[in-house]
Image (cartoon, rainbow, N blue to C red; front, side):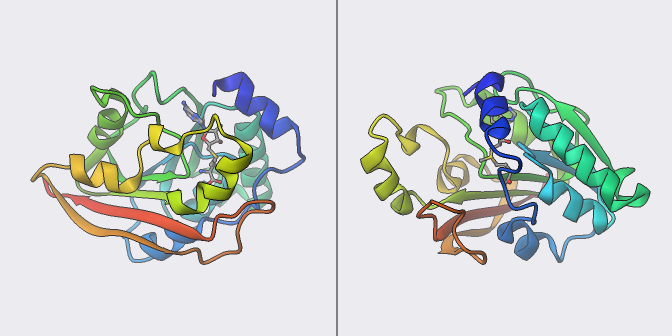
Amino acid sequence: MDAQHWDERYRSQDRLFSGNPNGVLVTEAADLTPGRALDVGCGEGGDALWLAGRGWQVIAVDISQVALERGAAAAAAAGADVAGRVMWTQADLITTPPPGGPFDLVSVQYFPLPVTPDHTALRSLLDAVAPGGTLLIGSHDLADHAAYRDSHPDFDPTTYYQPADVARLLDEGWAVQVNETRLRTAAPPEGTHHVHDTVLRARRVR
Ligand SMILES: C[S@@+](CC[C@H](N)C(=O)[O-])C[C@H]1O[C@@H](n2cnc3c(N)ncnc32)[C@H](O)[C@@H]1O
């Protein structure tokens, strides 16, 4: 799933996602003091704009230039205050570490991160969290993938990190605050069976 794949996927529709912030982010970040945030795989920017609207300085990174342009347009429409707090950055976060760290919040929402034996890309994201900062990962529940797998037998979601996999890799430098599966706060995205989220929230203690 390279840049061309994602650009084509975005171009296939005027808007791929709702434009609303993800429920996991809204639930878990509402009590955080605004600081610097990294939105990993920001898509069309619903989360980045929500964070900016709450006073966060956001680096919003995506591999798709099409998605980033949509995010920047939505930011401009939201006004200079919000637009001025988001930096839209094109990068492949599987092959390159995130720019501009460390961050008080690293938010990873529905980001397909392939499992590798050395966990290099995952470790780059963990390293981007400042001491005292928060790692927040939201993902679709694997159990909800069952119906999708019937029609896409080549897709194996277990080859991507799930929040619980990441929790198992965290050392004593982290405090896990949430590691659970829960009902989505919003309806499943159109045409999908995603009714549950799996969520990891962890604080970097040093
Ligand atoms: C399922 S979408 C989620 C978008 C957004 N986080 C949301 O919840 O609406 C995954 C996003 O990750 C981006 N992405 C996929 N692989 C990437 C990579 N290697 N580096 C950076 N972004 C990537 C895609 O372009 C896409 O926007």
